Image (cartoon, rainbow, N blue to C red):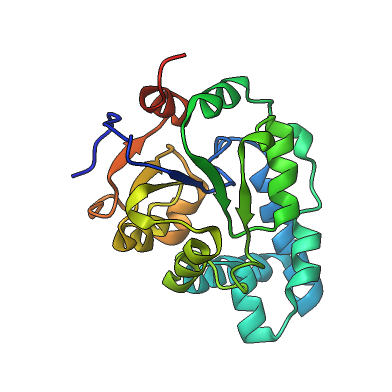
Length: 231
């Protein structure tokens, strides 16, 4: 059963955090920049009008887990040019996150990033937030051989690469479908639920089956403060 109240998480040795729209709010103006640049990249590469590029972008995201995966499989496009283009954005729109910094300092165990984006983008985000020094490793889309969440094989690869024991780990995500494989592996799952999240409409998600979600919060920092030992 999922809970909105933190419970005893002393068994957790590894905290696996998603990056975009998880470490920072989905209401931030950062990810919309990426969204626009994906559309522009598709339009330029496939010689499409922007509206058709947008429709293709979202269809590939729904069907393949990432737009990039669809572009690679259907059109044979290489990943490097795409990732460089879409992550060439203004990270200064993110606010520094002192409260997140403080609670991560109190949270026992390793902190890791598991993202469908690039390592460079993850570093830029974490440095802007002021939390990069808390994280021991980044498992990005290249490390996953461009097989994205929620494909189960990339979770297995991530766990092996980072030496994670599923039963002693927790995964924190803003998209609850991405927690399905984590829960199946035995990880404790935390969904950061945010009203108006842009991906909910695209993915056609609803909240009717959350059996794979152990904890739900609309305030990541507040939830972690309930888990971390008192200062």
